[in-house]
Each structure stands twice: as C-alpha cells, then as structure tokens.
Image (cartoon, rainbow, N blue to C red; front, side, top):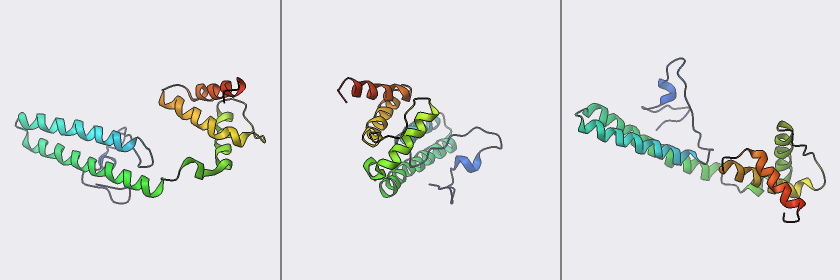
Amino acid sequence: MGTKANPGDYDGYAKAERDEPIFVLLARDASAPELVREWASQRRRRGVERAFNSDTEGAVADIHQAADAEECALRMESWRKEYRSAPLEAFGTAELEDALVKFSRQHGLGVERSEHLGKLSLQMVMGMVHAAVAGEPLEHGVARVGAGILSGQG
C-alpha cells in the first residue's frame, strides 16, 4: 500500500508513462473507499480468469494488486475518521457563507451576503449535495431550496 510520500509496489502514479492519463482518488473523497473496493473486486475477477487460462504470474499479480487496493480502502477510511470526521456544522456559518457566495458567483446565481444568508447556507449546501447525488446540476438543488423557502416550505 502506497502513499504520496512512500509509493507502494503497485503504485500506478509512480509507474505511469510520461503522457499517460491517470485519475487519482484521495482519502478525503467520501466515495473513494467504495470505488477502490469495486476496482479491487474487478481486478480479483481478472486474476481468477487469468488463473483459469494458465497465466499464473498475471493471476498472482492481479490478486496482490486487489489485496493492496483493499488495504488502501481501509486506510482511506481510517484517515477520513481521523482527519475529516468533523460534522458539517463544525465548519461554521462563515465558511458555509463563503462557499455559497463563491459558488453563486461562479454560476451566476446572484446570492450575496445578507443577515439571512447564514440561516440559508446549510440548506443551500444540502440542496447542492442532493442535486449532485441525483446527478443533477448543482443549480437545480439551490433552485429547489429557494423555491421551498419562497413557498413557505423551507
């Protein structure tokens, strides 16, 4: 199992060719452990197929990579618990306001600081999260929260 400071035996980043496209998952991404486990499952299946086709060396390498990936997923979860376990409220209203105003400006939504923004920040952030999970544009989540507030449901 590797880290940025200490690449492992199966570290794809260290072995990538000069212009080879790569995609890196970080432990701070809540989806990363599950995605790494899915990759490990597929790699293990490939190892079994290789074993049935008498490619023992390839099968062993695939099984070792799968085990390494599963260890990485466990370490990602441990890292997140240690360094990223604070609830959203711990970030404070000011940070949520900053994030919401920045997002609003980037997407032309017109949200600026006001005395009511702090109360809306968490609702807006959660609206964006729900939209992202549903695969919708984030603006849809913000618009839904705004519509709920205007109709008296928010």
